[in-house]
Length: 150
Image (tube, rainbow, N blue to C red; front, side, top):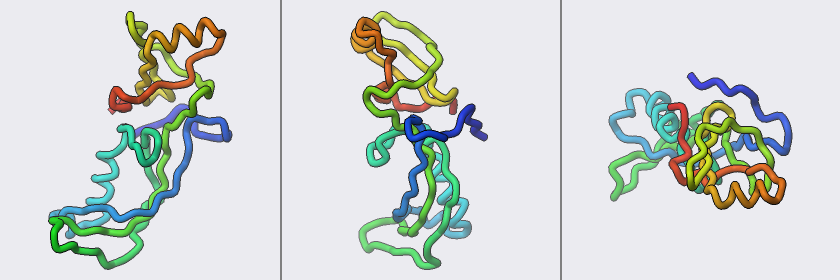
């Protein structure tokens, strides 16, 4: 189980709830228990940077399968199941201030842990420039996989 130390409560938070509707690609092996198959696939996509979301999905809830019917495409070995889900996404904005724990200060980067869950890497050049300007780093590129804790 994942427990966050602080849930998003302000508009300025780097954590955002996003309501999503899409068709989940599901292997026929999961047709005996569609909800479990979708949950497994969603779980596997957590703690990884997602370009479409613009951040790292940390958790999901309110999963709803929108139809008892699924689409089978003639050239795809999967079925497409329409779902709705709410995702908690770590998506700091450029220039946004946030708290994080410094894990490592390397010669070329800072390694941070945000919300006790997400690894953030900031190139040293950026951190030094921000410190010189009197600003704390706002967030990382997430290019290290964005995962953390799991």
